[in-house]
Image (spheres, rainbow, N blue to C red):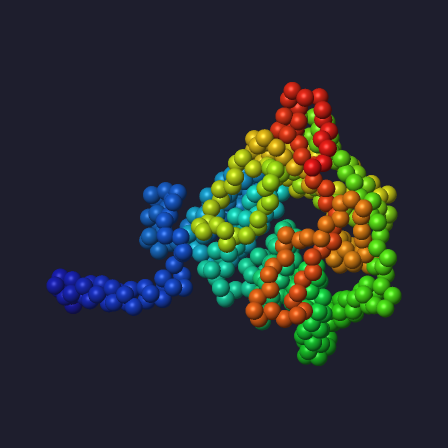
Length: 425
């Protein structure tokens, strides 16, 4: 017997009322845990909007992410950024999109010499911060934030704050827990580094007792043991009764710059460290501009960067106590616009990031080095201690050598002057 039209309509109405009631009750939960933080779907086509509001957000996000990945492999970086924004608006819980997108910005937007466009590091950090806000119970993005500070920004003090949060998650990948100990070491928090290695050894020993035949458990146990032993040996060698860092080595540091072609600067100098494995840092930037890698300064996320800012950073290898290289910025005018009147070339050596065999002589923070002209005791990455800080959290300023040389825009572009060399400030 077929239902009458009135009964059918009554049934449909009941279903609609039930769906409305269900939506009313589950909407707050969806809004809290699943709704994207970005409320405006800027850039979506009408067809994409229809799919999004019809309940196909995750499907559309997957399609767009595949397309964005294709843009990366074809070198079309400009198309990646708006695509990332759309994907995360559609599905803010795809952690891989946040981590991969931040990685693209921090590492893969490069010039012809494969130097990263450091103007995009702050947006990368802000992108990860947004990902953490949308996915606070997943360790991956905490680690990615810490790793970016540790490796790309070379700010181990900030890295420890994020890595410590990542290490609190039980599902954290075991090998990645080691980075926190290394970051503590790089920031001069030696006791925290030792304590972290002790904790990692205890974890590894416990896992090995559970799985004595598991080769991964055995390797983890042996690796953490070795790292702890090496750390303790280095502390004794560098700060014991007869420290190898004393007396200090005079580095006899100096550097010069020369504009050899428009937008091409030759940097050369000397650094009195005879062993291999040492590198000096070089930065070319708008005069007076200090890059601040702090996503908190961006109230809202944006992919926009300062189009008038020139900021080039590179490292030069030291061989037989000398370094020399041409820095060619002529092929990337968008990345190095040179629109300001003056620029400064900063040449420096920071022992904090040297190889262990170099640090054995100079110390983690440069205790074993000195210089007659360019020694400074400073570190722009030192963080103030809070009220709950412990004595072992204290960070000492690093001793480093640094020389700053000023060049005008006309000199860099070789306009109206034959003087290609500029004296230091």
